[in-house]
Structure formats: structure tokens, C-alpha cells
Image (cartoon, rainbow, N blue to C red):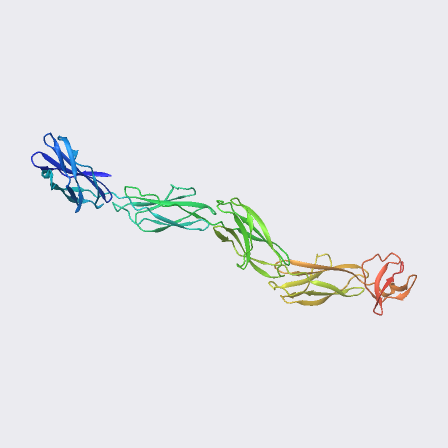
Length: 446
């Protein structure tokens, strides 16, 4: 509240009148003050008096008795409710006394300076959530008040009622500020106020939470029908709990696995039920209440299925092996190869795409009556799957006999069977005579 006085107005020889004005903003309160050039004891009253100020007339009835000296006294109580302009100016006033001591009636003027009016309280809003390391804040004031030049301040931080100054501006209206280099998954608080020599009130306080950082991902172990994805998350501000989710192709995200909140974490998940030799696009994201952040898209290909193999025929020095592969996703060309030395060396059979394929290959120069294990594998860029099969090459026809036990006189011409100790008398060997399966026995030492 500020105060100014009008110049004193002489009323008659001894009386003096002035107006005291107390003002703030657009409101003014006036008080009529009275003194004499020489002391006098008496009484003054007028029930019809009015005080007109800036064109606004209000009742100013007064009643005063006692000694009036050279010091100013209030002729009556203050009169409120007058309006003025905050830009100031010179206002006329008239003190009218139609009855009583009309000799006190007078008029004059009073000058009120331009007032310093505080700026309008700023408004503020935040785009929520932000990115993993930025928040966007919209802020501003509609008026700088009086004087009309001033500064608007924006404050922000991780605690409530922030006092750290982020930026300033000297214009009215809204602006957008990007608060950058922030911690992920962290809540930030913001507020604003303005100053033109007087401070406005603080704006309301808003919060914005940055998103969790994207996970780091890599492809782990793959099988014919599953893919493992390894992930890790960095430490962050712990604003919300996090979960890891995955999606094939970016739609239909998994329910999610909760991971450590605030601290760094790592782990893996396995996607099962996949097709062989098939390429999959896999996205992994960290999800929080503030939103999801997706990491790099990985492309992973399942392994080819192992070929199906069987013995088609066996000779004394070789064998014919059948193989087949089922149709698959065809992500990579498959190379089929075989080995009979435990996988030390491999011989290519053929190459195949995604369609089913089958065929045979012949093993030659094998040793008679010897156990062999043949391995057949399917190899792609993604990896290898192998099948194996054991068999025995045939004995020479003059070494195999069949018939009843103790009467082994029928020579066997087509023998195949499991590995057995052929040096032991009466060892069972499976074979056939005339296309009919029989159990035969080998003579000891023959």
C-alpha cells in the first residue's frame, strides 16, 4: 500500500484542507485532513458532505470537535472504494459541504504515480512422458505487469518445489523448453514465476517422467524350434518398475518379465514353438508406466532340422543310406553331408532350399563284418543339426550258416544285423533266407 497527499487548499484565513490517498493496484482509499494556521477549539460537522474523486462521488459526512492546531488531523474516517489506474495520473477532487461548515468546502488535485504491478502468475505444463533423456515444458505469463518489462524464470529438478534455474525469457506468452541430458526412468519437477521488480506467485508445480532406456540385446542359443535373446538394462532413476517384453514383428507384445528397478539387470528369454530354418524379426522393449522404449530389432534364424536317415541296403564292403529332410522356412540354403570317421571329415551329398528333399548315397570300400556309424548333417549359416545311425557290413557268404541250432548248414546270402561279438559261438545274428526273416547262428571259428 502506497500513500500520496494532495497539495493543501486554503479555506478562508485560517483553515487548510488536503486529501490523503492510500492506494494499491486499482483501489484507492481517501482521507480528508484538516489543520489551522493558528490553534482553535471548536466543533465541525456536516451530515451531507461528499467527496468526489476521479468522477466518483461518495458520502463524506463528518463530525469533529476539539482543538485544531497546525498539525494535520483527520476530519473523518477514511473513505474506501475509489478506483484509479495503475498507470497513475493527476486526479481532481471536490469536498462539498452543503450544510454546516460550508466554509470547509474546497477542491484540488492529487497526482498518483505509475504503480509497479507484479506480473501475472505464469502457467506451466509438461509433455508426459518425455524421452529417455529429455522432458518438454510449456511455460509463460500473459502479462509482465507494470512496468511491462521483466523476466520469467523456469525452475526444475528431481525434488519437489525446485529452485534450480533452467532458463529465463523476457517475453510474454507460452514457450517450449526442452530439458535435456536427463536420467532415464526419473521423475522431474517444474515450476515458474516472473519478476518486474516485484515477484509474481509461483506457478503450479508439474512433473514429468523420462522413459526407461532401451535394453541392449543379442541373440543367444538357437535350436531347431527356439531362439534365446539375451538382454541387459542400465541403472536409472527408479521412477517406475520395469518389465522386459518381446514381439515378433512389432505386434502382440508378450506379457513381460519384471526386471530390477533402478539398478542394472540382465537376463534372457527363450521364444519356443518356432519353425526350422526360419528367419524371425524380434523386438525387445522395456515397459514402464511412463511408456515403452524399444531396443534394436534383431534378426535370428532357427537351426535346420536334422535329416532323417535309414539303411537301405548293406553289402560286405559298403552300404546304401537313405536320407530325407522336411520342408522348412528356407531362410538359408542347407548343405547335406556325411561322415563315417566320427565327424573328422565330411563329404557333401547335396544342397537344398526350403522344400522337402530326399535321396540316397553309397558308402564303399568298407571292411567286411565291421560296425560303422554314419553321421548325416544339415548345415546352414545359422548352425548345424546332425543325425547318426550304426550298422554292420555283411560277412562273406561262405562264413554265414543258418538252420536249427547245432545243424547250421544253410548258407546265408543276405545278412544284416546289430553289432554282436561274432567270435563267440552261437551268437544270434539277424538275417533272411528267401526273403523270410530268421535268427541264424555263426559257427565258432568259421
